[in-house]
Every structure is written in C-alpha cells, then in structure tokens.
Amino acid sequence: MSSVFASTIGSRTLGITYPLLALTIGASPMQVGWVTFALTVPGLLFYMLAGVLADRIDPRSIMMFTETVRGFTILTICLAILFGQVTIAHIVLAALLEGGMLIAYTLAETALLAKFIPLESTTRGLALSETGIHFAVLAGRPLGGVLFQCGALVAFAVNAVLFLFSGGILSAIIERRKARRPRLSSAAKAWQGVRRVRIKPIIEEISEGFHELRRHRFLRHAIAATTSTNLAINTIIVIFLTGSAGLSPILVGLVLAMGGIGGLIGSNLTRLAAVARFIRPSLKVLAIQMWVWVFAVGITTLAEPVYYGLATLVTGFTGSLINVSIRAYELRNVERAKLARVVSVHRLASHGAVCLAAPVGGWLATVTNGSHEGPMLVFMFTLLCAFACSFVMPRWRRWRGLLNSS
Image (cartoon, rainbow, N blue to C red; front, side):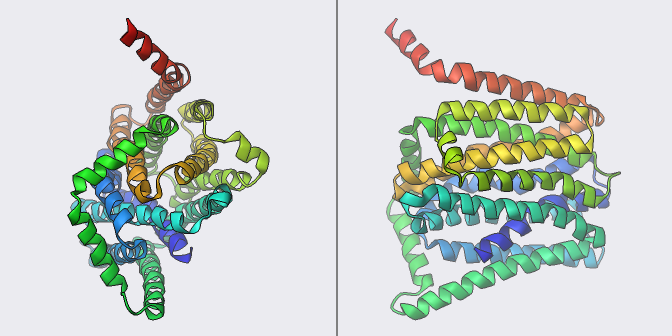
C-alpha cells in the first residue's frame, strides 16, 4: 500500500504541475490541452496490451519497472528546468512516457488486488483501496500547487523521489520473496509470463477479454456511463486549468482537491451496510450517477473557482461510490484469469474519454475566450447522455427484439 499511495500522490501531483509548467513557459490554452492529452493518450494505445501482460507477468515486477522509469523521466524534466531549457516538446514527450507507465502500473495493481481480496469481503477491501486512492488525490492535487509555488524544480524533484521510493519498496518486496523461494526469481517469473503471451497470440487474448465483457450487461452499460461522465468532468477541468493563469497555484490545487474530499467521503460510506446495498450493481444506480453529474456540471456554468470546486466535490463523491460498485462486480463475476483484460477494455473506453477531454477542453476554452459558454456546452452534452442512460439504453434490448421480429 505504501507503493500505491506514493505512486498515486505522484501521479495526481503531475496532473497539476505539468500544465502549470507549460503555462510558466508561455504555452497557449491549446498547448496546455495537448500537454494534458499527452498524459492520457497512451491509454488509447497500450491499455489492451497492458491488460494481457498484467494477466501473464508477475504484477509486482511490472509495477517496479514502471515506477523506476517514471522516476527517471521526471529527473529529465528537473535537469531541463535547472538549465533553463524546458520546451513544450520535452514536456509532451515526458508526459507521454509517464502516461504509458501509469497504465501498466494500474492494471498490474488490479491483478495484484484480485489475488489478495477474499470474495466475501470484496466491498470492504475495495472501499479501503478506494479510500487510499482518494486520500492520495486529496493530498496530491493541493501538494502539486504548493510545491509549484515553491518552484517548478522543487515540484518535479519531489515527484521523482516519490516514484523512485515506490519502485524501491516494490524492489525490496520482490527481493524478500525471492529469498524465501530462491528456486525461481522474479525475473524468471516475468520471462515465463512473456513466453506464455507469445505461445498464445496477443490478439486472441485481447479478443477473449472482449468476449468475457460481452457476457456482463451491467459492465457494458457501466462503460457507457463512466465514459460520458469522464469526458464531461475532465473537459470542465481542462477549461478551468487553461483559464487559471491569473490564479494562485495553491488555489488551483485546492479547487481540484475537492474531488479527493468527495471521494474520501464516498469510499468511506461504502463500508456501511445500507450504502453497500444502495450501490449494488444495477442500471438504476448508473442512471442516478448520471443525473447527479448533470447537476455538478451545470453549476460550473457559473464560471467561478468555488463552483468548479463544488463540481469536483460532487463528482468525486458519486464517482467513488460507482467505482466500488463496478470493481466489486468485476472481482465477483469476471473470471480471474481474464480480469485484467476485461478491466483494460473498460478503462480503455473511460480513459479514451479523458484523453479526448484534453484537446476538447483546450479548444472550447479558446473559442469561447474563457466564458461560461464552454461549460454550458459540456452541460448540454451531459444532460443528453443522462437522458440516454435513463430512458434509451434500458429499453434498447426490447426495441432491438421488436425490430428483429418484425
């Protein structure tokens, strides 16, 4: 858990410090959008492959490798800052690599959790995991603003230390396990995993993940709901970030940290039996989430930092409840040997929305000149998606059956 906590804080801090660094060197709103896009676009390229690898290779080995790469990548940014040679191209390339490593890390973490959380205590175990994540979000976002206020070099140096610390913890665990079972090292296990992937074509294993997902109606609808809501709120965040040049970095971090506060409240409430019953996987729960997000996005049309903060608070709260519901369903109902691949399909869609939100938010901020019109367009999109989730998708199977029978 120490590794996950340090890694999550580092990731959330970078979500603030990368755009702020771009603004510091005079980047335009569109360029800031592309920097955020670079953090998310690897999800479109590598999620499926990372899911296959996480099902085949020792998760700890994957996590250790990715954390080490992320640490040294951030160190290159530190050197560029130190010598005054920071460029948008360097920031984008570093963000691309960071995004790819984050994907591999999170999927390996999911595979590792599946091995240690008993089915009878799935909700409680996932609530604890979700609480840790949101606590890191709460700490990471304002920490990014505070550290950047102290200087860009300080902010990125702390990030590098966090990732290298996380990788060091995982390395120590692997070495300890290797000492207990010397007959097979972690490197040998990783190589065996790679060999198993080669024996069975990767494309076939990816296809198995899609086929497994098709068996679960709730997960299919959950993908549609989380994809649309992720697109909406992350577009709003990018609009806020691109217009934050005149705000204190600490204020920017605090506004976005409200999502962590909401997530902490929601994930802790899922430990209560009454709340756990309320969020049992169903299409009704997904529809309620959508309408709550309509309200949250709607208040951002007032275009003040306090309303952006309230929106991230509300979406963090409901998002944590739904995350526990979806993850509990996955652990209980998806075949364990295919879990990472199914999760990778789900996250590919939702992450693709996050990826798309970056240039869309930058474009909206540019064409609307930072007015309330950008959030208003996002609000209309969210309203349309909520209507579809509540009234169209639940009836689609019946309508399709009537069309086929006619």
